[in-house]
Length: 220
Image (cartoon, rainbow, N blue to C red; front, side, top):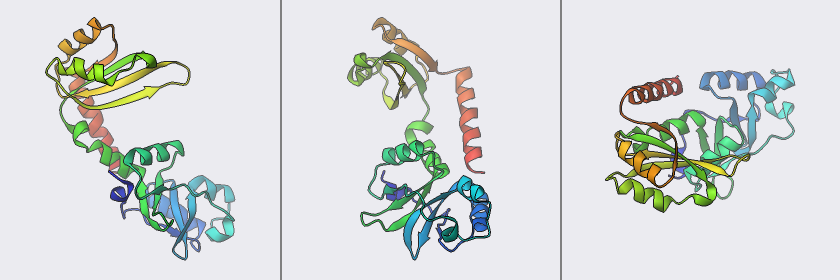
């Protein structure tokens, strides 16, 4: 999935002649804290809610309030992982999308991106979740996959998280079965540390409730 496929028309861009007051009103209406700004159709940057509030003069135009704006963006050909990384790194609620010639094509709101991720098949599909902890030097997805497949199961998706304060990593696995006991026992025989597991029973209902709550929040 590329950035061009994630663009939505739900959040329009501002123009350089729009006022700070209009900017704040649009941010409230579209439930975002950032908006792209165009000048004569060209992308000039992204304005944030905090930037406007700091100026204390919302009646002025964006041109009058700012000599320069930060220009974060992704290219239309960027992969969804690059979009996620960029929007997370810069703590944006909206990321503009430009083509190779830096023409503005649209934007991707964080809420829209999260809804897209949440609605992917691997996340919505029934299954258990297993969290492994290990040294980064011991990590082998080939071995992890082999252990799971030896128990007649498959990995639907995986996620790796590391910490700057440790050489250990966490691997979160979504597996296409709610019965994880055999898989857990096999991992333990190979001396893997099972940090957490969410499987059939009370966790299933809890995870569904949390998923539904997230979806309701994002649709506000």
